[in-house]
Image (tube, rainbow, N blue to C red; front, side):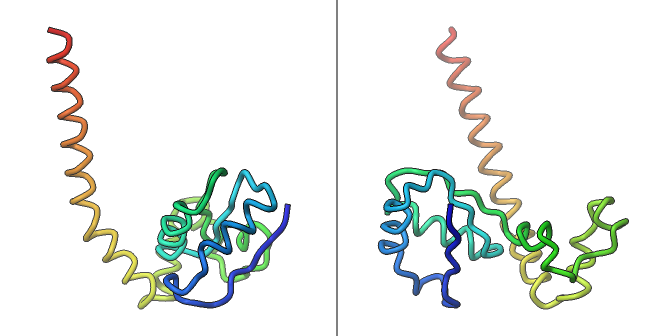
Length: 130
């Protein structure tokens, strides 16, 4: 197992082919991506076409949190109550609110698409069973 720290670049500037070749050479089967949302999701979607094997897992800042290197965590009671997001909004309002607004904007569309997909599947199942 090895750790590769990506250079500080915009997500469009990475050499995805070279990164995939490094992973292939190593034989990686599990690829942990810790870039933070939404950068890690975009990174993973751009890397995927170049991968021949392996599973990518987006983990955000979890390595920092559990290794103890990120001391800027919410108080323990907030973490236990699953309210750390409120602390993060308080600490970095511009960054976090932008993310929240993006989620609020995308969520209704995603929920509608999921509802339609399930409805279509249910209709097709009912038709095939007649």
